[in-house]
Every structure is written in C-alpha cells, then in structure tokens.
Length: 326
Image 1 (spheres, helix red, strand yellow):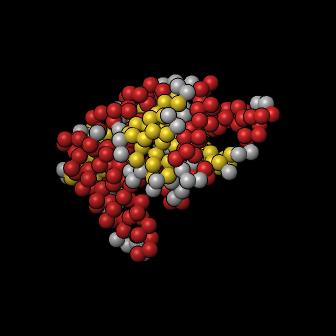
Image 2: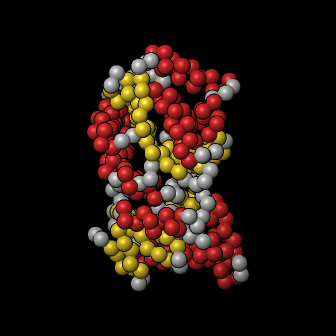
Image 3: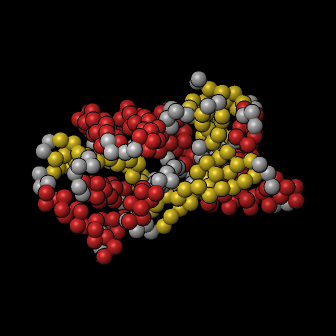
C-alpha cells in the first residue's frame, strides 16, 4: 500500500524519503520527548504501516494497524497551526475508521495538550467540542543531567560506580568502537539473538510467550536501524571483550540541549557491561552534541525497566498523553 486518499488528503507511505520533510517541521518546535524525531519513529514502526500528509501546514504522521488509522504523534509545526490541524486529523481518521472511538492521537507533549485545551475553551461554540474528547496520561520519558550520568557522584550512584569498577577490573581487555554498520552490523544481530535466548531460558512459559511477542517489534527495529543506519543521523557505540562484541547502543540528538539513547543491548553474562557502556556512550553524546541532558525514553510500562531508569535518578519526568474521542 503506497498511499491513501481520505477527505481529499493524500497520505503518503512513511519511508526514508519522508525524513527531510518531517525534520523541516520538527525544527519549528522545541520538544525534548524521545518520540519527536524521524529516526525514533522510523525505526520503531514495525507491524504498523506509517503514512504522512500535510494538514494546515503541519506534518501529520498516521499509522495503520489492523485496518485502524491513528496518529503516532500530534501534528508538527508552528503553534498557531497545530490546533486546527488536530481537529482536521480527527476528521481524517473518523472518515476511515468504522467507529470514531478508534481514532486517537498518541505521544502528545503537555505543552501541545495545554494549548489544545485552551483552544477548545475559547468561545461557547468551541467549548462544546471539549466534551467530545478524552485525555489520558500514558507513559513518561526519563531525562537526566548529562554530567550526573558521567560523574556518578554521591551515595545514590555508589552501586553504579561499583559495577563499573568491577567490570573494568575483570575485563581489562575491553575496547570501545564507534558503530560501523559494515564492521559491526552482523555481530549486533548475533548479540541480540543471544540476548533474547538468555532472557527466555529461565522464564516461565507464559511469561516467555508475552516477552517474545514484544521482541518481534524490537527485532524489526534493529533490522531497520541497520538497513538505514547511514541515512538516519544517529550515532552508535559497541564494546568488545576478547574480540567478541558484547554490547551496543545507538542514540541521536533531539534538540539543542537534549540527546537520546534509542536502544542498548549487552550480554547478560558480562556483569557491569550495561552500566559501563551507558556511561561511556553518554560521554560521546555530550562530546558530539554538547547535550546538557540525556533522554532514555519511557519504560513501556514494565516495572523492572522503571526501576532501572529510576535508579539513575532522573532530573525530570516528562509525561506523554493520548487524545481520544468519546
């Protein structure tokens, strides 16, 4: 399916060619959520098909999953254009979907949400529209001060420092290399497969089935990342021990002050490897982008992942909302 035509809008297939168009509109806003980048969306679109169009001079990213059309982000562009575009985008979704309750806009930043609510409340006629929408707080992005993650000062980071020191003592022959797809791509896939196997080997069967369902999306994301790595404006790091690749991570610049870690995987058998490569990668992100903050995304609702991200003492948590229709 290459395009859709709905309400006189042509929704084009969201592929690598959409990158300069989306980034043109991303430059009009200053939002530090990890979801507001081309690479982040392109990589993680898996079983859903992405489409985009321009509505009221805003970039609108839709996804089609099981025949239902929704929006992965709110319209992107200048503030005075966004709120009319939100209303129009719901009309586009409603035209396609069997029931308007299927229509929704995900990953809405609180600034856009507040502006939309204010917009709806202006005047009696528009105020009536507000009752037609449901707003639900979803996940939060974890954002840290870059220097906190590098220096790991104080008692709260004592465990992290110990893990890193133990890793450096046990594996003095480790080495770090900036990711090169030609040199490292195949080894990254092998490490990911080992990571999946190690995670599932001791899991109860029912937990393993749920885990593997989620892994399908991550496997697809890694393959897409590797296929288009050189065109995505991302940066990666790998770690070797005894000439075997034991960890990799990839990130990008979100804004002038914020960089993000998109994905990270390490060998479970190498204690301290995850903590070590994370700190070293943060150093690279600071050097490359002069980033004051690091966004590591959300926890996807997983309690264990939440504990790990909270253990690094985030400086702020930025909530993300979904707008539904009643």
